[in-house]
View 1 (cartoon, helix red, strand yellow):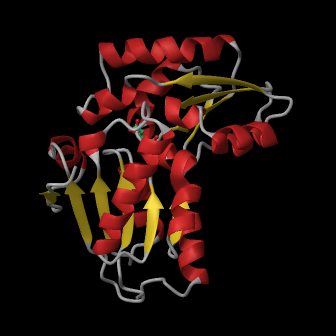
View 2 (spheres, rainbow, N blue to C red; view 1 turned 60 degrees about the vertical axis):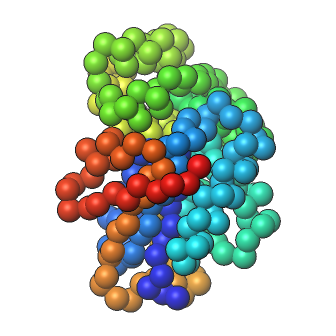
Amino acid sequence: MQDQPIGIFDSGVGGITILNAIKNLLPNENIIYLSDNFNSPYGEKSNEQINYLSKKNTDWLLSKNCKLIVVACNTATTNSISYLRNLYDINFIGVEPAIKPAALNTKTGSIGVLATKGTLSSQLFNTTSNDYCDNINIIEKNGDGLVELIENGIYSGNELQKLLNKYLQPMIKSNIDHLVLGCTHYPLIKESIEKILPDSVKVLESGEAVAKQTKKILKENNLLNQLKSSKFEFYCNSSTKTLENLLDNRYTINSINYE
Ligand code: DGL
C-alpha cells in the first residue's frame, strides 16, 4: 500500500499550492491530482452540493487506488471533511484558514481573513474562529470573483487589482497585521495582494502545515512510500489550459469526462 498514490482534489488549480508543499516535504510520494474545474467555483455552493462533490471526487480518487486523500480546498474541508471522515475508512487531510497562528501572533489585535463565502459561513470555520479569536478583531471578506479570475489564468492586472482593493482596503483601515489566505487559489495571487498591503502585514497560507500533517499521518500509519518513484498524474474535467500553464511541461494533463 505504501507506493499507492496520495489523492488530492480541488475545484481547480488552487490545490496545486498544496501539492507543491507536499511534493517538497515528501519527494518520494506518487500523487494523483483531480481538478474538478467543471464545477468551479465551490465557494458559492450550498453545504449539500459541496458534500456531494467532495464525495464524488473522493470516489473517483479511490477508484485510482489512492491511499490517503488531501482535500486541497478550504471550502470543501470546512463544509465536508467530517462528512467524508464518517463515510470512509481511509485518512483525510484537510486545509483550513490559518487563523490560529494569526491570532496567536497579532500585535495590533486585528487580523484579516480572505476566503470564499462557503468557508466563511461554515460551522468549522466559525467554531475555530470562536475558539482562538476571543479578543481579536477579525475582518472577514468573501473574495467573490477571485477564483474565477485565477481559473482563467489571471494573476495580476487592473481587474484583479480592483477586486483586491475592495477586499483589502477595509482590512488595512482596521490596522490588521496578519492576512490569512483562506482559499488555496489565493497564494497564486500573493504578489498582487502584497502590492496592496503595507509591508508590516504578514500573509499566511496553509500549504506547509498541510504537508507536515500529511507526512505525520502517513508515518503513523506506516504508509510513507519507501520507493523513490514520485510519479504525478493530473486530471481535469474542463479546460486544461490554466493547469498546463502552471505546471512545467514535463507533466501531461489528462482530460476526463466526469461532471
Ligand atoms: N480552492 C478553493 C478553496 O480553497 C476554492 C473554492 C472555490 O472553488 O470557490 O476554498
